[in-house]
Amino acid sequence: MMKARRWKASTVRKLEGTLFILPWAVGFLIFLAFPLVFSLYLSFHNLKVLPGQKIYEYVGLKHYKEILLNSSELYDSLIPFFQESLMMIPIILFFSFLISILLHQPLKGRAIFRMLFFLPVIFSTGYVLTEFVNQGEGSLGFLEQSGAGAVLDGWLGTGAWAGPIRSIIGKFVLVLWFSGVQILIFLAGRQTIGRSAYEAARIDGASGWETFWKITLPAMVPFIMLNLVYTVVDLFTFPFNPIIWLINDNLRSYGYNSAMAWIYFAMIVAFLMLVAALAWLVGRSARKPVYKRRIGA
Amino acid sequence: MIGKTMVNRVRAAREHAKLGRRLVLGRTAEEGLLFKLFLYFVFLSITYIYLHPLLKMVVKMLMNARDLMDPTVTWIPTVLYWGNLEVAWNALRYLESASISLSVALLAAGLHVLSCGLAGYALARLEFPFKRTVFALLLVSFIIPPQVIVLPTIMAFQALGLDGSLASLVIPAAFGFGTKGSLFIIIYRQFFLTQPKELEEAAKIDGATAFRFYTKVMFPLAKPAMIVVFLFSFVWTWNDTYLPRMFLAAAEHVPLAVKLSRMDQELEFFVKSAQLPVYLMESIKMAAGFLAILPPLLIYLFTQRYFVESVERTGLVE
Image (tube, rainbow over all chains, first blue to last red; front, side, top):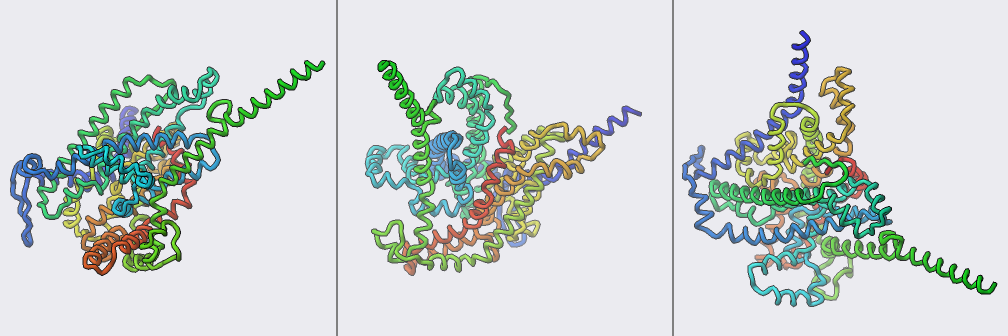
């Protein structure tokens, strides 16, 4: 009797939990699982839309072969994009880390600066961003005025990295604009470091510089990793990157576009796995911090 | 006697100098006046670089054709010219498309607050089968670029008779999807994880059901998470140009984002057919961009204080 009751209670608990997650699960099936499977299916087919019906013709790996082996379209936009990302990610991380550390200093008017640095998240719509890039408003004006731009141009020459570097310099301010959420994460992360660690360091006579390297930085490593992942995802799912235009090219067939989307997705996953491996390596070598911390996500 | 006063004076002078130095340099570097001045300098210069495009945008949109042509006018227009704003306002049918955008964004944000809360709470505190798998799938849905699934989603909406309808932008939010839905679930989950477990145990002893406990205790507690999710969801839904353009390609009543890209095409056409000079097109585009970001900007300015505090209290990153 007792045993049956207890079993029932745990079933009830599981049922309740299931009810809570059910809306999401239904949404997952409709808005993610179905489109995902269907686009995979499409990528192996040719779709012919005739009045009143759709005909799916199996073509195997034809689209994949064409994209990967027979055309340079993908590589032409993918390689510069990856090069740009490789440069943008450290810039964004370094900038947001620096800002968040500075914002943590006790300073009058800190709240105003904090508000200002978060502003781009509010207004960086795709439209405004592309307009700024097109009209050259994203560049650092003083580079051109001081003539440093010309010197840099000559130095860069026409190597494989010259194009991406120029493009980054041309929209440098907008690159910084991608840092809003990252600054927020770093700020919140900085608050998880207890005061006592700093007090102890001070009593031991450590300078601010030493404290930064020995306490702040090691404690921030998990947040740097979190931001790294966030930045990668954010950049790669940003709807105005060049690959997206390829995927949405209306002149191509649905099947071809789906194959392109899947290749792109596979590359993102590969890139993220690389980042995760890196994070794991760094996490292993970093000294374990003194206080308890929990990383949920 | 004289020697003693001298010693005292020298000592006092030394003390004084030390005090002065302490004021300027500080006991540690972080406390000195010099360091503070340096910080202000860094902040002000970064703020200038950061906001430069925005300032340029406002200036450009308020210049008339003569100022735009005149190379000596860089920052301050000779007269405030509202014509660009007027053209953009009319071309966008601003009131109509802004209210469409507003209702879509408000609805999506409201639905996100409700649906993501449920899922986040389940993942943080409740038991259900395949919990680990669900969490893994959640992370997967976070990293999937919308481009991968957008074509079949359009086909699905067509099959449901929702293509070209504004509902296609709102309905996914009711299930915790839509613009960055997975991120909002993660935010809620992080918040609920930081709450004390004793609350639930007390409720269990009282015999309250999970649903009752959630609506009466946990959900009202989650105000910081709600604010963060609401504001993020509102702003991102408002700013999203990609999904509306894909879903509402041929619709007549469209949100601002779609209207903007249509206006763009019209302007390009006018420029190509030489009916409009390029510099005027740029100004009109800047005015349109300004109109597009104005509402979320106002909302942020009024709520930012509360918002930043909430971010710190959600345990977003713990």
